[in-house]
Image (cartoon, rainbow, N blue to C red; front, top):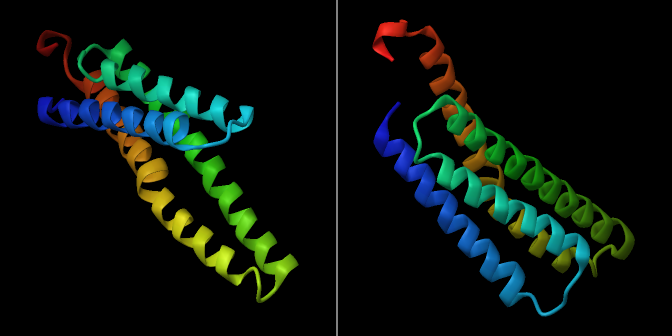
Length: 141
């Protein structure tokens, strides 16, 4: 398993956790338990996955993969809710809702790389690392 990639994933997860903490906890003016709970779960998953990438053992790789899978599920839930909001604004408000729909379209496009592609890349890399570790001989471990 490539040490550089593990450090990239570790740093990326910790930066993502810090950014998510700032955006949801500090920058949002209103509190809503649904958003706060999902954000705290994602922050914890990013921190745990980031710390797990520092250890090369199979248990840590599985932990990092689980954290990335949790973030991937939350990202897909976020994208689905944004896309549902786009369709609702366009359908209910017609031409007046087009501005809100355009804004939510930008949010949806910005969600894809950070909330879906990043955790998906970690899940794929961790899966390949676990598979490669299982296929190498015992003496090489």
